[in-house]
Structures are given as C-alpha cells and as structure tokens.
Amino acid sequence: AQSVAQPEDQVNVAEGNPLTVKCTYSVSGNPYLFWYVQYPNRGLQFLLKYITGDNLVKGSYGFEAEFNKSQTSFHLKKPSALVSDSALYFCAVRDTYNFNKFYFGSGTKLNVKP
Amino acid sequence: SAVISQKPSRDICQRGTSLTIQCQVDSQVTMMFWYRQQPGQSLTLIATANQGSEATYESGFVIDKFPISRPNLTFSTLTVSNMSPEDSSIYLCSVRLFRTANTDTQYFGPGTRLTVL
Image 1 (cartoon, each protein chain N blue to C red):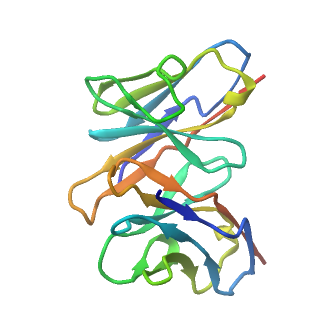
Image 2: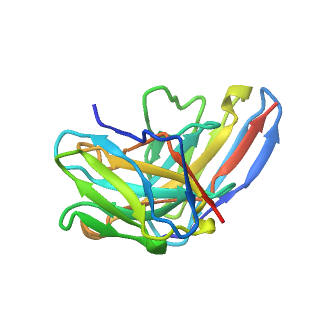
C-alpha cells in the first residue's frame, strides 16, 4: 500500500527561526512526492515536488524539501519562518500505478508566532 | 499553472436536498478530479471526471450519490445528492497539467464548503 505520514499535528516556531515539517512515505517503486499548503478557507496551493534528480527541491515562497531515500522522508523546510507562513501543510505521494491518484498525509498545522 | 474557480464557494443545505458544484478551469485540461476534505481530515479522491464518458469513482463513492458531468475540457460539475450531515465537507476540484515529467503537477481549486443541517 502507498501512503504518507505526517507525524506532527502541529508545529510551533518563532518568526525568523528555521522551520521543518516532517513527512515520511511508503511506496512501491520510485516516489513522486508533493507538498501543498492550505490557508484558512482556501484551497490547496502547490508548493513543490520531487520526481527525480537533486534531493533538495526548491519551491514557492522560499520553501524547500529534502528527499531522503534511505529514511523514506521528504521534510519541508524554510530557513526563516514568517508569520504569514502559518497554515495547514499537506504532504502527498502519487500512486505509482495510477498517476491520477494522490495519497495525502493528515496535514500539519504550522503556527509561526511573532 | 492553472487557475481554477468553483461555485458556490460555500453553502448551507437541508438534509435530503442536492447541491451541484461547478468547476471552471482557465485552460483545456485532460484530467479533472473531485476530492473531499471532511472536517479536520485530509483529502480523499472521489472520482476522475472523464470528458465524453462516465466518471471513474474511487472505492466508497458511487455515481448515484455523486453524479459528475464533464461536458468539455474546461468544465465539470459534481452533485452531492440526497445530502445528510455526514456530507458536510469541503469539496475540491483538481486538474492535472502534464507536458513533461518535470512539469507534471496537480492543481486544486479554492474548494466549496458545504454544511448540511
């Protein structure tokens, strides 16, 4: 079975500090991994993805994610958090056999305090 | 990227009624999907909206409850039929843009927040 796990329901960080939102995955075959952000009363916005190539992927709004095959992880990171980064973050993996199907994590609420 | 709009953005409905949600994309796309996000939960794929043929439903979702139309490559509707409070969710339209493996990405609409009383 293919799945992703986000072990933290909530992450709290002070503005200006680095942030990490964790994601681990389980797939058969090569993983196609994604991060999305959901602001209150909004849909999901695409942040970044990993398909192949460099393990460090850079995305929108200064976010980046590091793909680690040995640890089956794809943690989202940002060097300096902003209050405006406060939102719900979802990790997702694409089904290896059906590219139209995504498996989403349970979401992590990021709170950035001034 | 794709700009996706949904109507209505939110609605409050009575038990037993039906609501049709519209999804409009600013460009022609082959693949359109409907997702459900129940309160405090993650996203679950309801179905793939196929242009010119019947939608493909995921396990646990049936056409009688969630009929879908896809009349062209920029538009789709999802109907939530005979609603009950358990149908209270955010319903999201999604499209897949694919030109190359590197540009293959899925985008989501703003969602329709449905409350069933």
